[in-house]
Image (cartoon, rainbow, N blue to C red; front, side, top):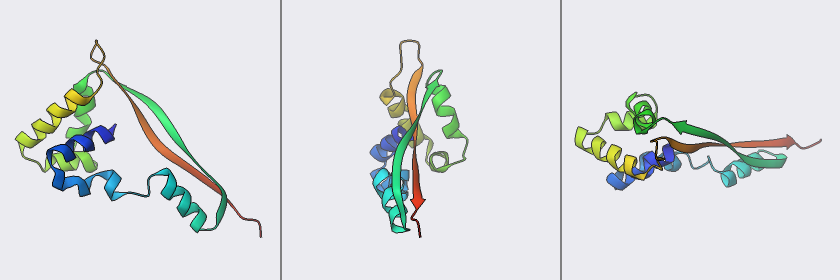
Amino acid sequence: MVRHFWDVAVQVNPNDSKLDQAERFPICQPGPLEALFREVGLDAVAVRAIEVATVFRDFEDYWAPFMGRQGSAPTYLAGLEAGTRDRIRDLLRDRLPAAADGTIALTAMAWAVKGRVQPA
């Protein structure tokens, strides 16, 4: 869900790519998570995606949390000039897959990782 936001924000302001969560937190991907667990001595490491369907009534339902000034994306938006913020909003509205009734169905995803302490 936030991936769409950062893709558009970086399209509008390429110099802000360093603020993208994917850039700031590269460990939050399957390969680095698995490597970290193995580096600390765990075995039987498994990484899986947790996906949750999210449906927004319309674009405004999706956009409203970004205006709350809590979290990295809302804080980023709050620091922009109104024209730039509007451009991001408009490009994002065009990019999101809206159904005929205006609903926007997206998938939120997180990574789960588990490992086992090696027997002594």
